[in-house]
Length: 295
Image 1: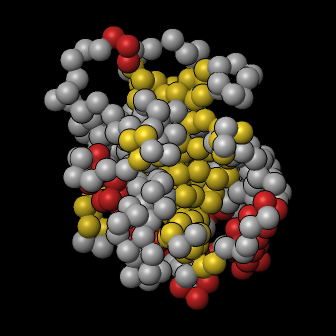
Image 2: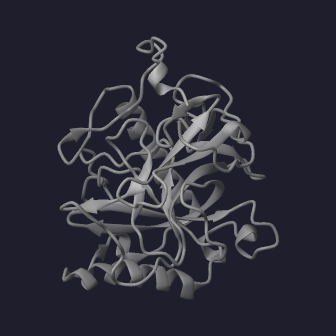
Image 3: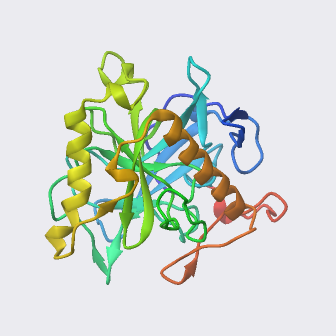
């Protein structure tokens, strides 16, 4: 089994509605409650980046950060959902970690291209970068506001708090807004969020995109416009007249990607990563006590 890692505070999955859409807040396996105090981050592979992986344990078994950690973490004071953020690339670092879509249990690992580990070449990350659990940007769904389908990944997150997250850390975040990046004719939403538990920070008090300093939004937009130029590629583009959209719009985007994920998880559609089918877990009706999935 993997070594025992850090533990994080409690989350409870619930079911709620926003903008008339259902939020599936329970863990994918069917439990109505998800207690983050029982979640452990399980590093494996030591210091060798070629084999290093971050797994997740819950009640003595491996779980998927993509499929089993609830989309909705809690409810904000105004009734809007707070979401579950999985840290992949901490602020100030360059190694491109990501939730692996096709490996069993979807560990967080360093991405590769043509067999080589990937790093940001442009500069270290400006933000805590990662994804929202239980989301997926479906390439077959053309978004009316961008004209392109999704990028086949969990929805990306720019968490703007000053404190760097730890790779694999799960945090409760408030959605503030979003940018509509268009990358190689794919919609690649960037949700702008803040850690609600970063007590005393300016970011924890933000409630909407208008609270985020315009210079910060501009800095993030220009970073994502330019970062691929360091690899000899062209500039990225943005939809929606390059505007940073507000909280209400961004939450609608988040819910849409959550609904797309539900279709994937329920096997109404499918995805692959480099030709290998995405791993969507062992559904309750398929499980038969496989001891290989125990920690």
